[in-house]
Image: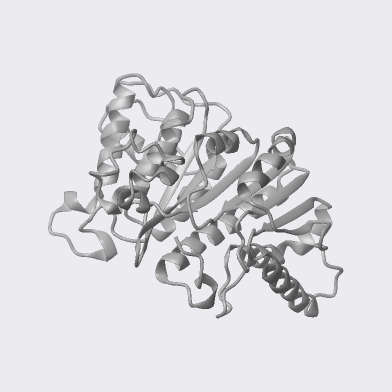
Amino acid sequence: MAKKGFHSSKFDKGTKSKLEVFKEYFKESFPVFLHSPAFDEIFIYDFFAGQGQNAEGEYGTAFNILNEIKPYCNDIRKSKKKVFIILNDNEESEILRTNVLGFFKTCKLSCLEECVFSEDKNLIIKSENFETYFPRIYPAMLNRKKVAKILYLDPFSFVIDSEILNKLANVPSADFICFMPSSYLKRFPDTPSFNKYVDTQQIDIKNAKAVHCHRLIASYYESLIPEDKEYYIGCFSVKKDSGYYGLIFGCNHTFGAEKFQKVCWKFDKITGEADYNIDRELTYDNQGVLFEEVKIPRKIQLFNLNLENEIKSGKIKTDVEAYKYALHNRCLVKHAAQKLKALMDEGKIEKFKTINNDIHKLKTPTLIKIK
C-alpha cells in the first residue's frame, strides 16, 4: 500500500470508515478505563500515527485520540490517574510533532486550567521502527498489571505475524486494533513478504472471494490463539477503490469484545462486519423483501443453528458460555439472548433471565437445562 500522497488528499470512503471505527471504539473504551478502579495508569499507543491529520484538516487516528480525550481532562485531573499518549511514526514524526503541538496550542486557548498533557512527560512523540520498537517496550507492557493499554496499528503493510500476535495476546489489560490491506494476499498469495505474516497454506485465499479476504485472515489469526486461552479476535472489512482492507481487533476480556462488536454493528446492522454488503444480503440498505425468513441475515441464521446445536451437544452449558460464543462469532450478546429466549418459548430449555450486554457483571453463570 503506497504511503506517498496519503496525507495530501481527502480521505476516501474506506479510509473514513476505518477512522470512524477507530474513533468510536476509543470513545467507548477510554472513559471506562479512566473511571475503572482497576487501573492506575492508561497508556495509549498509536504506532503509525502519520501526520495526525491530512492537508484538508481531516483527523487521522492520532488527532481522533486527542480530540476524544478533551472532554475528560477535568476527570483526569480529579482522578489523578496518569494518562500517557505515545504517538509514533518512523517517517512523519517532525510533521506530526508540529501538528500535535498546534492542536494543543489551539486547545489551550479555550481552557483556563493547566493542561494535563506535557510533551516528553505524558505526551511522547517518537520516530521509531515498529519492528524494533514494539519488542523493546514489550517486557514493560507485560509486567505492568494495573495499566490499561490501547494499541493502534495503522501501517501501510502487514505487521502482525504469529509472534507479534502471541505477544499482543499476552499483554494484560490490552486492546489492539490493526488495519491491514487484506486483499493484497489474494492478489499476491505467494509473495514471501506477505507469507511472513500470514501462512496462506492454512487459508484458501486463492479460492476465496475478494470480499471475504479479511474475514478469512481474521479467522486465521483466531486459529493461532491457544484453545485454552480466553481471547477475542474481531474484524471489520472496508472497501477501498483499490481493493478490500480491514481492521483486526484483539482483547482478552469480554468487556472489550462487547465494545468492539457494538461499534461494528452500529456501522453494519446486518452482519456487523463491513462497510459494504459482505454477504450480498437482500436486507442490506433497507431493501424490501417478500419472504419473512429472508429478513433474518444468513449470518444470524447460521449462528442460531450452531448455538442450538452446541447447547444440545452439551458443549455450551451456561448462559455465560452462550454469550461468549456470540462474541467469538462476532455477534452481539443480545443475539445469543434472543436465541435462548426462542428456545425457552419453544419449550426446548427451561426458562431463566437473560441479559443483552455486560457479561462481566454476571457473578454466577446460569445452567442451561434442556427439557
